[in-house]
Image 1 (tube, rainbow, N blue to C red):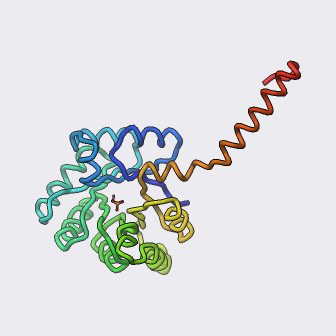
Image 2 (image 1 turned 90 degrees about the vertical axis):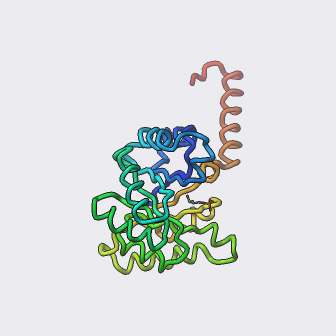
Image 3 (image 1 turned 120 degrees about the vertical axis):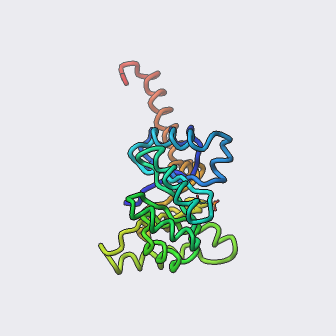
Length: 225
Ligand code: G3P
């Protein structure tokens, strides 16, 4: 079963969907943290507490090996369920090797090809984040990359440990297609999660049931709810 992550740093949204049992994890990035306007550490700690023991990705902002390793260790110390998010650049691969050897789980982000994902997995990343929406934006086939990656993972079975975390999801069809392919995880904004659970016919159907029930109760007071 595909896991659903929320791609947001908004605690209210996370609480809302977590109460429905829909939040298997949370991913954040510097843009999402800045959007909330709150302190990075406090935000991550609060999210980690809310969804514990589910994983929460906290991204490094350094771009050199030493800086990424140091920020990675710092972020991991904030909560047990922190996953350190590292960009798919050569220095990031070095940091991934070091941190993963220390037992710190890594989510490698900004992946735009199946080969980059393979490289990230080889370096020791536990989660691979291919960005499908941003590939679609430039006229490339985001979901094709997921199909390739899932096929590769399937071909290696137990020997391919990293999870395919489909990122940059923009709409419910992305979720549907990723699930059909058998991707491990889809991370999505709250607006997309909302669209997964809403259907106008559900609301119309419920209204009709209740109207019929209330009408019958008025006509036949012997009916009790
Ligand atoms: O968290 C990374 C990714 O999901 C960003 O998505 O919509 O900014 O391309 P987007």
